[in-house]
Image 1 (cartoon, rainbow, N blue to C red):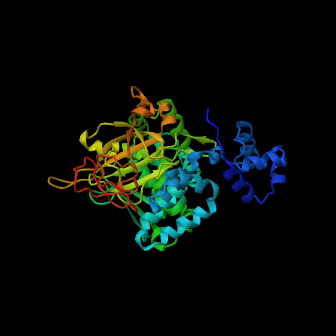
Image 2: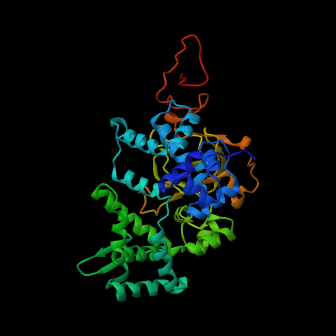
Image 3: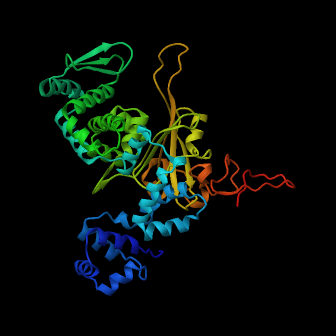
Length: 440
């Protein structure tokens, strides 16, 4: 087993708690000199010290893992694509506060400004690791009061009426939105043709918007614009609704029992493939976590409309996504799960699955929504998934992918569409090369 050094992380923790080396060493029952050697990477972090740090300072052991920095390294790679990953990793490990300031400055640069409200909300959930503890508990509490699925629609509509003064009218709409709320009459109208789980979701969404408005607005308060806050309130209400339809403890227990088989989970909870995948990516409750998933949704043109990560996978903000990524192959086999063992340029490896999903047909000749949904996890977690069956999970078998051409350092990629940003393109008039956009 390779040695792991975590000096920068230990020092960051100590300074964050305003402790001297002597004070921290005393709490950990270590000598001050030994702690000093740990902080200066002169000694590796042992399991015993790791557990002591976790217990005495109530911090997740993953805080000291190299994977903890993967997301930050990816963001730095976007800003400084010509700098080698090992140098970026060293900078992140040794100067985390400085890196945060550097990234903030890079985000303000004119060429990188993207203050769209949806990007702000996406980053808001991304930074929360796609888990909102307060809402998850509130949703689970409501689900426990509703009881069995056979009775929850009746009980939920009764609760809306009794607790919040909202009268539910089922089958009131034959087309258009699934849910329409009329504040002046306090009536909630629901469209025909929705499944039981979809109706439960819409009722729970209204319950959150009406009964937990203060909580939603409080969580969204730190977003910088009013438009972003409004979008976040809706997204948080949807998060609550998913927690009612698929309560955390039930979802995690069932997922473990069926080895995260998405189709079986969808049948159990009456939900769709995309909704089930999205909920799996939120199972990140402290002390009771599921497999830490990455969730993404894209269309045929490669536009990523949803992306969430419970751990360190980095989605590039610019330059598109990698054409070798399995999510693009999903459109070749509609409705079927496609699998891929993938390797990133930083040496990390993942298991990805992808499948297409399609919206409702609204009439002859009318286009309908069609996306590919992807769910991925670190390769070390793959054995917990049914989708690992029959796959060669060795890193040597992995398909080499990247974060997007403009930030990917793979020079000899046959699918490269753009040169690596920040590098000068090599043009050889005396040779015809197999690989485009060679840089130096």
